[in-house]
Amino acid sequence: MVTLATPAELADRLGRDLTDVEDRQAPVLLDDATSVILDRFPQYATTPTAVSKKVCCAMVLRVLRNPNGLRQESIDDYSFTVDSSRSSGEIYLTEAEIDELRPVRTSAFSIVPGAPVVTP
Image (cartoon, rainbow, N blue to C red; front, side, top):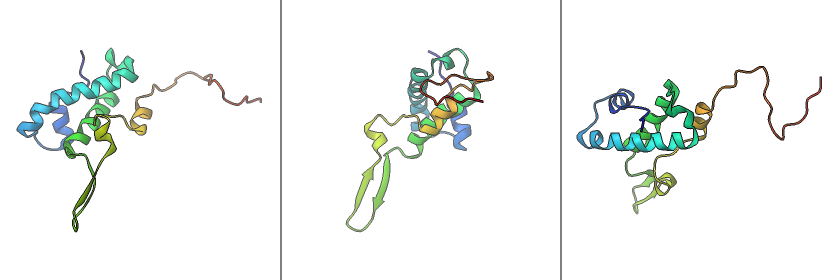
């Protein structure tokens, strides 16, 4: 299976070398992120792009930067909230990333089912 990004590219985006633990996790997490992307956008399996590589790394960086999935934490009478993404598998596409991965239409017009009819 093709992987859309490498651990070295991930480290470049992170801005530092990967720790030993991150170095072990990175290939697996990149494979997981690639699978999520290719499930929805199979065209990137044959023609990966800079955007697909960027999105793949962004998905993994969310996990590496917040490995415990904390969304909120308090100090007095300590409490914390786990991000809902943790319960859904941690690796996910945001709406903005989905928009980035959608192919850009290059034709003069497009047909959108259910769109209102426009008459000149």
